[in-house]
Image (cartoon, rainbow, N blue to C red; front, side):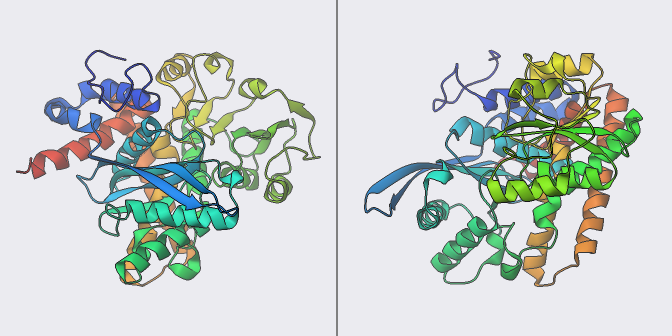
Length: 428
């Protein structure tokens, strides 16, 4: 940890986790912020942190308690926006970092949101559907004091989905005494959800992947793709690349790593994962690889779309891909970033690569406010335009400043946030 960082009392100085990665990224961008750097400490401190107890009655009559978090990192440019994840390894440091990356992401693609994130420290597979519903509703009630359509708008993340958002929307609405569809995004279509939202993050990864491939001289038709995580992000991205003629040669998830040199049958694999919960047991493969060998698979494009801190200095030298598309949030450590850049690997950072989800969440929010809904083609066309514009803006800064795509994205994102902070001033 750099000595110029003041560690808040609620984090252990030697175990700051993902938050430390974010702080290092801010340090790298600070020299490029000019006069706005006087405000940079704003980015190193979340605006608001809420830690809640989430008690529920289990199906067997016992009482269980879970830790819940909601962090609002910055709201200078608009209400907080960010997902809610249910995972047994969720920590405050992780949620803080994820909320901060949302601040940068929303700013980099220029949607009018700040950054927020939430989570419950729980393995959802250990709960029944009824227990999951009760936990979601109690969590929503506990954080209800800081969320709202014009305050902070949650969305799905790891182990949460449209049903989770429906429960959250209903709970908030019942507590408010009115139907508030705009309090969450990623809802079912029947409750004001948007067409194209479920596929949006994966589609955004595909769109910027095609733009990055053009810059690196990689032809999408015939390109070899390796995907870590085969859920809503990695699975959709893999399907779109396969439809464009790419070969998805390796897929890794919690069930293991599968490989086929001529390309896996992605539609069949998606059906298998939907039925069985992982890639384990899929028959159309050449080999099951040890998990650590995923990183050395011969491929053109690698898509880490699982959890943070997957690409580290321990495996960065093994990667053979020309392009890495960060479908997950924070999958690459700063040390690995440096190694990959020195080796000529183009890393398209999470704050651009996976911004398709929050972009269509923005569309959903706008549609809920107006009660006027767009067609799926309109959604996808608007998403494609915004993602391409954001990528090319970042690419221009990369070439102009001779920096990585991540630093360029942070230059754009941090500049917009701090300009808003400066113009608004401090109150009182």
